[in-house]
Image 1: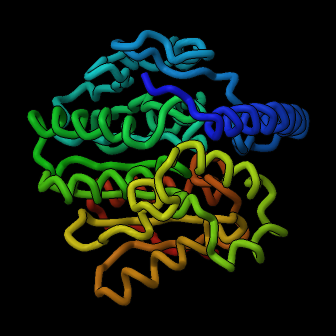
Image 2: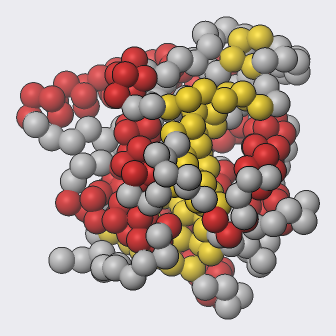
Length: 330
């Protein structure tokens, strides 16, 4: 187990304090959503969820082992699978599904999956004749990006043993969306067959947050906090340069990857880098599916709103390789 440096300890306490604020704010959003019958938009999660248990080291220090939310456990038939010290939750299709979805949940690289991740993924799984896999990958501040890749690459290789690469989808939201792209790039570096699709929902593509366009978005993003993100990203990167492609895949090689899709709202801080990513791929002649939803906030795709349902249908169509309505305006 890695020994925490003073810098990492400082990040831990900063993130913990900000996490308490985020928890209170999330509770407020939950309260007002319930009383006003509005959809809940998950913001920045606190450390209260705790990490997954590591088979080698035992529970990560200072945080309890992750448990599947009780309502999800009762409602859905997720099975727990352990590989190389990382637990994943698997939702199988009743048929012998050939397609596999590896879903990398968001949470700023510090928070665990919340019930909405499981609910939304189950909905997509049921409409795509797929087996869905949600890994609970290592999180900061106790763990950094290297350990996440040490767990996720073997999971992908294990999936390849039973599924053709073209039938594998790597998908994620927020930090998980950035991780999906970074994982595909790492697979390419290791000469491992690319997945058929890489789907990024409101992805965090650059943890350095140095894009000048971000400042213009702070006034319209109701949820993401720049200071919180900077601390979380630094904690996840550890001693690495914040522009290391493994933590900020916008600086990585985009060639030779699977088919890429990016869906984002125009009222979120990550829009600036999403547009930069679109420009980079366009300049290199790399085709991508890129969709912006006007005035939509962070990870709106997972919410039960008109725009969220439309974005979800786009995801389903892409996974099923079907044509459909890809417009983002009424």
